[in-house]
Image (cartoon, rainbow, N blue to C red):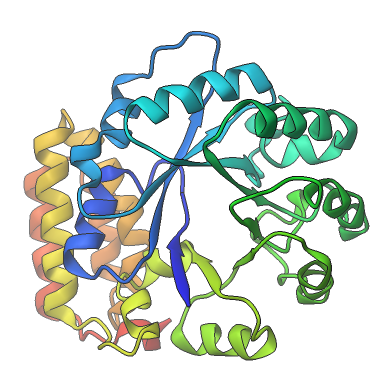
Length: 316
């Protein structure tokens, strides 16, 4: 069994990944949120920090690339190889409209002929391992059999399937029937991704698909950072675990990010997911959300930890 951390743009940066690794670990691979491959060969400062080997020390990190241009993909992959990476991931799953309207992410799925040519070029022109993260299509799951025909032509490191279509975003339930059909015909190793929010969710999916060896989790980890540890039979997070995790995240953001506003933007996003682990936390979560200075934020966080009973994922 292998567990992977999904790449979540703007959230699972190197700061989040390092804190998660140090406090909980449990993952076999940590996927780095997508790099937009472009003709300009230079990585941005943020991208350089995210892919820096020293910022991913101890963990098996996999950078994700977003593009529909094969040459741009290859240039970016070669640059990543210079950083020491042996594996990259192609993003065919991002449902964001700003990405999809450019024909990238899940938007590329609507262009199967172009996608096939793209894959033919990148697999023939690099010796790096390439995994693919995909959705079932743009509009409906009937698009997926054609996509599977294409995927089966190429020697992927693995095919990571999120069994929703683009227009679902993260609503509706994953289409497990289509996932099962894809699993049965795939010539590549298949990884399941979607709606694993608890160890029970994991057991349910695993029992339904006993042949699947890899599972990717994203939002479930944001809501319970100890999820991978729990799935592996370890203990669920307690309040002191979450406090340690929070403090490591917060103080690292303060060191690495300039300005209270930018730091708090990051932390408020984290609390959107963490607050439900505490009973009767709405009042304090609102204070956290309204805080505009770090000193006010720190006071609100201390109040929440002092006054709210920690119930873990039960309070959701």
